[in-house]
Amino acid sequence: MHDSKNGPPALTSFNAHGPLTIAAGLIPMILSPWLTAMPLVTAMALVALGATEATITRFRSSPNRGWVLAIHATCYAGLYALFVAATLDQIARGFLGGWAAADLALSVPPVVAASRMVYCSMPSSIDVV
Image (cartoon, rainbow, N blue to C red; front, side, top):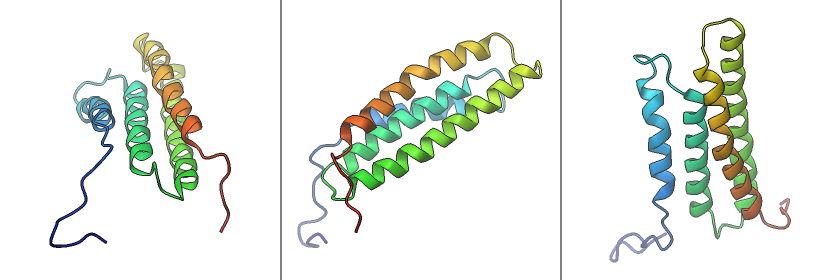
């Protein structure tokens, strides 16, 4: 708990890239009802990358960092898999054109980067309490 006289503690290691990357992914998602050819798999990958960066920054010194990162990675991997599966289904039904393949290809680097960040930030062991 912080001292009410001095205010909340200052952020010592705030990384502005996480929120900016989340915003870059959310903009296409917000616009997708009006622009149906928006690259939503890449947008989801950017949100996952930004959220991963923000989570790692937030829980860097937490004793529960391993569990938080494991749950975070599992949730975003599941969301990414749902977006990929929905896109592949739409391609199979003939609703999406060639841009969908480019969307899938462009989504791989952010997901690989987020996975690598989680792997590199995991503690050597996760304690079970």
